[in-house]
Length: 182
Image 1 (tube, rainbow, N blue to C red):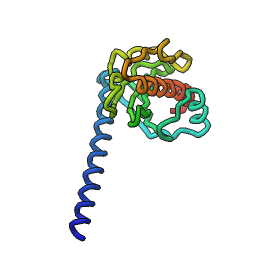
Image 2: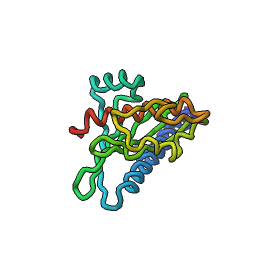
Image 3: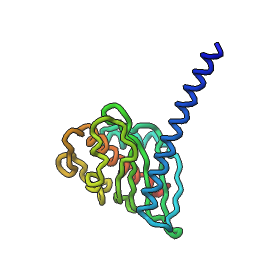
Image 4: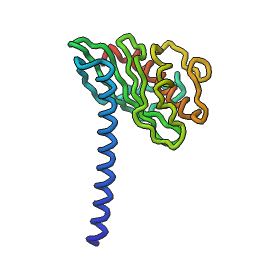
């Protein structure tokens, strides 16, 4: 009985520890992107943002993709006490696993950059490529996000490309909806 309890305790410890390590890795990568984008004078706050059901439903219907959860992380980014950008950390489903991504938008709602923070699938990781992500720079909630037209596809990463593109579009619309209240 003691051995069984001990083994279960060790398994829970390992699972909890690895989850904390992944969360810390994601947090550090996100904060590095912010610092590299805005320099040494940057300051930021972040909070878990619970999506209001009416806004969530409206965006999901527009984009034809559900949000991964009812909450995501929202960053308010300032330089010398002036808000210069917002950041959104969210997830979408690839083939079967979550893809964690980060979108930086200026105060007008235009994309500054998009980054894949954690890619968990064995295939389709090309969506993490910096060159592919650069095509979103300057897009906003009114932009065309059609894969194959205004967004380049990637051979072998069709599901990831479509999922991440829809996720980024959801963030631009969400930012437009809530930026005055962030």
